[in-house]
Length: 212
Image (cartoon, rainbow, N blue to C red):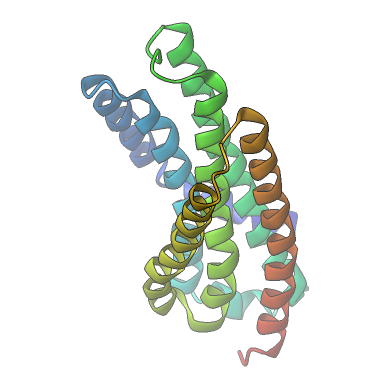
């Protein structure tokens, strides 16, 4: 599995210059618009979307079919992509938190507290993590082109659930305190972790049954 992961990271390194340019544009845009939170959230999204790039490289080269002729199991093939997803998730969060920290030290975030900014970033990150937990089995089953069509639908459903939850809390007169926000983030994270392992098992089953 280590070799497969290195292969994915080397593939992503090919777009290293593009990534630096994107980050620079996001920084310039956030400074120009005086919205530092734009960079922190968009960089998380950008890092997670690199999963499309990694899996597109494999699909164009028919790598999965080749990999199954090697001493590689379906579990190894799937596990590599889920580990890569966690790496991209962590990299996006790290970059986002660093930007948030620098913004607060520079006094550019007087409109919101550090806790609120961190909570918003975590919600965004876990939202995309859960979206890819749903999307990865679709990628393995249908391929990249068809899987892209499901991305919008997945986000509509997830945002619908979030919006419905917020509206329900307002109708019930529940006030969003700092303690409640942290509890909700904890529950959201626990749901994402459970969904991660469920998604992994589904993907393994799909790849094992796939005809190469």
